[in-house]
Image (tube, rainbow, N blue to C red; front, side, top):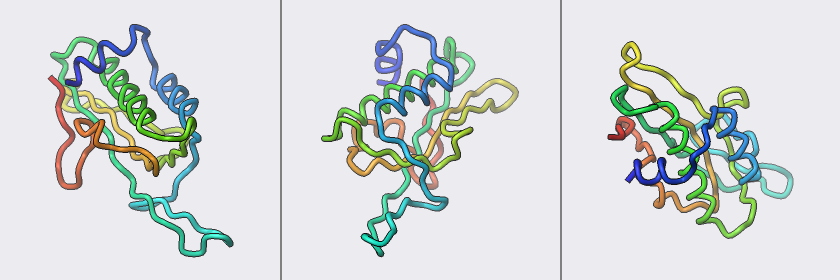
Length: 145
């Protein structure tokens, strides 16, 4: 499933900054709160709703051709799919991580595994469409083939 999504979405090469920029064009991105969810507070909403952060992420092994690029495309495809489930043309997205590290990449085990991840809250989105990329609590990130 992930190969079909990541490889067929786009033929351009994306840096991590390119992925974040495109996401910020699709969504009305805002800094979220530190914690397990983003809460709306203020004079008009003293005990506003809480939107739990969802962890999106995948791992690819070094046997996957262009593993890091593959993961960036898979992440971008996930955001595009989430956007399509929203009713608003520019739905709100709350980033859990700071601006410099919105989406994080890392290399594990001496370059044998690559990981990409982020934590977001999109009140309008249906996360079911990207279930393959959602990391549940106490479960590892999924490894793509």
